[in-house]
Length: 368
Image 1 (cartoon, rainbow, N blue to C red):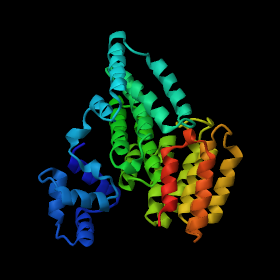
Image 2 (tube, helix red, strand yellow):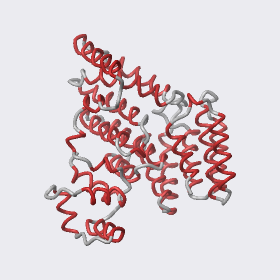
Image 3 (cartoon, rainbow, N blue to C red):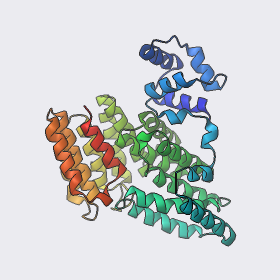
Image 4 (cartoon, rainbow, N blue to C red):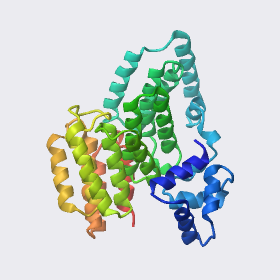
């Protein structure tokens, strides 16, 4: 994706005109940027320099790395090799990749089975374990992409892989979500196109990271289809969390209502997969959303609903609910008590069960 396209998507996700974007930068930095100059950026006639890249990052709620040269976002294997893996692991990955090419690799049915396994394992494994396993699978599936159906497999693997990076670090998570969306487009898989974008939106919105891109992915999912689906449900709640974090209470509550209506038609019976949104997981989404909005009564009700059906083998999500309680205490004025409550809850969870999202929630709770 070209830099101008990134700027345009983020601007439109905020509902801003080119003139409004120029004004936002001028108001914050005392510059005299014109609407025409923003237009030139988006058309590729002018490339914004470092100062304006930082300004765009700030006013559009997007990581600075998202505005880097698109050449750096083009290749699959180069990006995988750039994740700072040890040389011995890189050697193993190269060997696995060439072996897959020579031997033909797993069948589509085998890949679907692996995806189901990873969807379940993601719910209980730590980010490091998931990242190592999926790195290997991405190298293998890359060798089979002449089969259009495997672009869909790749898109879902990349979405899980993106989730192992904190959205707030600015580069890896957003980058891999973008790759996943493009891979789903290559597959021409309608459901996958919506799902990967919706999953990206809820991941970034729930984490409170890269809110501009949370909006972009949500808007893309909504533009592809308004048919009730898990992808659409994720997209709506991703946008709701972004609105809540910006202080737009009315929009957040409206999206919550829309999301509950979608759930009534598309909610999951499957309880323990990242590809599912059962009743308890919907209420985890809602618990944090309502805590962020200061609706303590609604948040507590959502927490109680979630606990009634939360599988016992998923203690990490019970910890999410406890951290939401800590956030509620902080927002009610008891900062010390809220931080202590959240730290105790996180400390009670074995370290190998910790996720990047939990750490980011802890950071939000500790924010002054």
